[in-house]
Length: 133
Image (cartoon, rainbow, N blue to C red; front, side, top):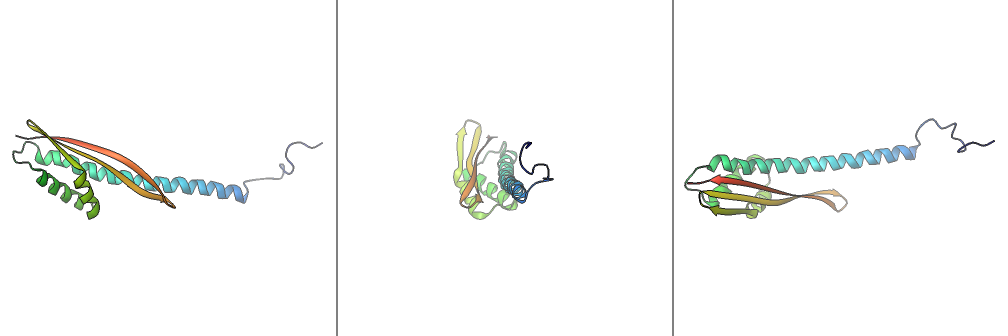
């Protein structure tokens, strides 16, 4: 009488192919987590630079777009964001002025290489309202 799969009673663990598959899955998700951590680390640096603008320029009377961009650039350079990326972010800044308020909006995308020509891309938006006199 034959029951089940032939040789199933002798197998004691995973095969080499099974281990290779497990290691590939672990490697894939490990690489994915490293890339996502890098993306969110940069997002936190940029967000802190935008939030710093509110603290620095709140209730100032002479706030110009150029002054804000220079301060933003200095903060990002201390956080080790590369120069070309800082220039790109400064171009993406939008300023909306209202009575007694200046709104700074930054919409941007962070893109990182993942595997063989594939990229992981994530979009972010940061807004800060600065009260001006």
